Structures are given as structure tokens and as C-alpha cells.
Amino acid sequence: MHVNDNEVLLQEVGPRDGLQNESAVLSVEDRTALVEHLSASGLRRIQIGSFVNPKLVPQMAGTDELWRRLNKSTDIRYSVLVLNKKGLEKAVAEGIPHVEIYVSASETHSFKNSGASTEQALESAVATIETAHQNGIGVTAGIMCAFGCFYEGAVPLERILQMLSKFMRVRPLEIGLADTSGMADPESVKTFLEAVRGEISAERIGLHLHDTKGLGIRNMIAALEMGVRRFDASIGGLGGCPFITGAVGNISTERTVEILHSMGFQTGVNLQVLHETREKLLCRLTNAIGRKNQARRSYE
Image (cartoon, rainbow, N blue to C red; front, side, top):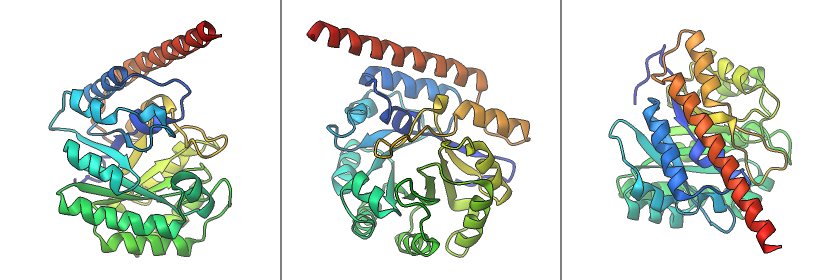
């Protein structure tokens, strides 16, 4: 999808990244309602969940059922996160039009996230992308910990460029660069984006920013100055990687929209509906925690 220079395309990742780090596990019915409320806000891209091991990430169990229940809009690109061919097979079986496949640039995080080295995960991802193409499914290929790792610190830029080069050979529609640990700052964002321009143009890059140091919005503004017009955001600023100690959420969708509109950018998103959706989500999470605590007390 082409984006004009004054238009910013936001992808809502709250139903996946936002919920996967919450102690409360929402029902499929509640998660479906969340996606439909987000759809009503004018967001054109929504990541509805992931096909991962439900024993490791129980918050994502039933994503296939969510997809079947959803009142789908032809104006929205729905996607799911998959880690391997098994996850892709589920996406193919359900007729999901777009998948996102991320590989960590950090060896330590890669083993914690996928049980494989970066090289092994990358080889698997490339093969999975090729299979997705064969089945007519759109792909965003992404790199986690692109701006540094909680466990390892700085990640060599050469490693990122090598990963990008391998991804570009299998022609994903877009590349996502994730600040999974929230270690980026505005200057490092600019330096990084300048370095990767040789592999991919800014218009095909999307940034996935976490707010660990409170710099998420400033990092987005730095990327805007470098020509990036695609960003992930999460309703209420929820989110975080379950495999990184102390990980905090993504940049908040409502705050992101407010900042972008104040800067003169267009998003097509209705802020009032977003705020209403946030309140409904927080109520559902509170109720789910209450039910969980009540069940625990009953058991004890």
C-alpha cells in the first residue's frame, strides 16, 4: 500500500503484542470484540493474534476461532504472527491473508523466543516466507532486537544487514524493524535507518517501537524525519515480550495518533473511538483478573 508523505499508516498490535504480556487471559469473545472496536476506529491494519504454542503464550490461544468469529472488513488488512511453518499452516488453513514472521538478531533472545539460534531461525523464516508466497499470502518479514538486546547489549549492524539481505531475496512486502528491548534512542534510530537504506527503501520499512526508556514517541519522530511512514502501536500502550525481563509496552496507539495529528500527519483514525476502546479493554482486563483471583480463592 502506497503512503503519501503526509500520511502515516499505523498497524494496531494490541490484540497480539498488547495482550501477550498481560497476566489476565481474555476470552476469544472478548478479544474478538476488541478487534471489532479497533476496526471501527478507522485503523486499516490490525494484528489479531499469533499462532504460537498456547502452553507458552496462553493469551493467544484460540486465534483461529477469533478469525472465524470476526466480522471482517475489506478495508482492513488483518494479520497474524507466525514463528514457523506449523504456524503458517494454520494461517493457510484459516485463509488469513497476511502473516508476519520475525527473527531475533540476538542469539540469547532468539533461543528464549524460538528455541533456535538466529541463523537457524532465519533459515526457517526464509523457507516459511517462500511457502507463504506459494499459497498467495502476503508477508511482513521482521527483525527483533534490531536496536539492541536486553541480554546482549548492542547488536552488530553487520548482522542486521546480513539478515535484511537474506530476507530481501525472498521478496517480503515489507520489513519490520523491532526495538524489542526498548533500547533505541532518536540518534541511534537515525543512524540505523541511514545504514539500512542500501538494502531497503524507507517506504517499505515499518518500525515496532517499545517504550522501555520513555523514548518511543521521540524515536518515532526521528524515524519520520528519515522518511518512515509505517509504525506499529498498541492500544493503551500495552505489550512487551514475555521472554524479556521488565519489558514494557509498545507506543500507545491513542498517544501516537494525537502526536501525529498535532504534527499535521493524517492517519484516518478516530481518536474518540480509540479512547472508548481503551476503556472497554481495561474493563475487560480488570474483570478477567477479578475472575482469575476469585477462581484461585475458591480453589484454595
